[in-house]
Image (cartoon, rainbow, N blue to C red; front, top):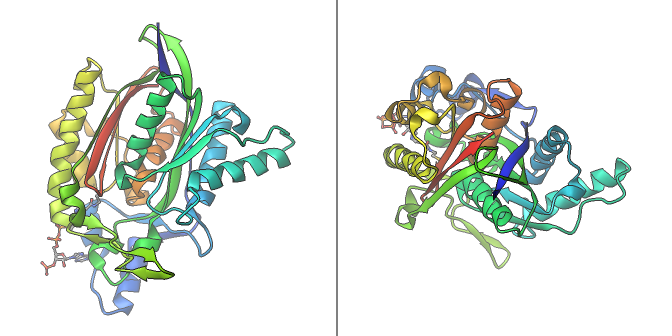
Length: 340
Ligand SMILES: CC(C)(COP(=O)(O)OP(=O)(O)OC[C@H]1O[C@@H](n2cnc3c(N)ncnc32)[C@H](O)[C@@H]1OP(=O)(O)O)[C@@H](O)C(=O)NCCC(=O)NCCS
């Protein structure tokens, strides 16, 4: 018998404001920049994305996704002894968005009449950009397997619209805001039950310039440029290669093959990257959960958002094997193989 971290529930949240490609094309046109719905759909597969209103933070989206996730798992926040939030758009420099989320969940529990609240467990953020959720779920899995935690809330939450340069037509059409969450719970079995079967994480910092937000805060001022910069073609090329490699690595670690995968839940950056990865792995496209068309790239939120979408649609079912994989700034990449 071994200890596994099983997914006991999922949840997600998108802010209500939805912008179609045409909405962005019109905004760009007002600045004298040309784009079109056809260009965006053909190059990326994206048709719409959601943006937060002013004053809404990553912890607010994380809160909504977490409440739905806890309800799906039948858990209270006082059951949770670990919260990890993957985000590159934290509410503030510190404290962590995870600590702020814990407080918001705890206040809501208290006002619901749960007088235990939910404070006291560990809470911290993970920063691995679009691979953030895979990093976070891998850390939570390791903590559960070593007995350091028993019930972990793992959230990806982003307000990426805050980082976008709306004068750069090559990047501002690609990203969106949102949050997704999973509740991981320790369980013991012989390996045939539910849980995370293997994880695989990588980074190569020599590529940090091809996708970055180079600004920072110092001495009361913003230093450098606080808006997203990307070499799209370099990112595309690198992403396609590493996603295939990490998928094969995680399958090998778990003693599985591509044929064992019921669902591929990849980072939702670009439909061409997703179909190319699926093709290399010989996974049919109808076994790939696709939300990029409606959400754009929500960075660390994209994988748990897509997973929750697949679960709530009744597609991803208990007992099925799900391969999640992410890639993003750093450069970072990785994957997690899970039996639901
Ligand atoms: C960004 C991306 C869609 C651009 O597609 P591409 O086929 O590489 O296009 P290019 O960058 O070569 O640009 C082709 C032309 O379209 C133009 N263009 C860029 N954005 C445009 C837009 N929104 N509308 C119309 N034209 C646009 C470019 O300026 C360029 O024009 P030029 O030939 O006159 O210079 C693509 O490179 C990509 O998806 N990369 C990966 C991005 C990603 O996934 N990032 C997140 C990873 S976590």
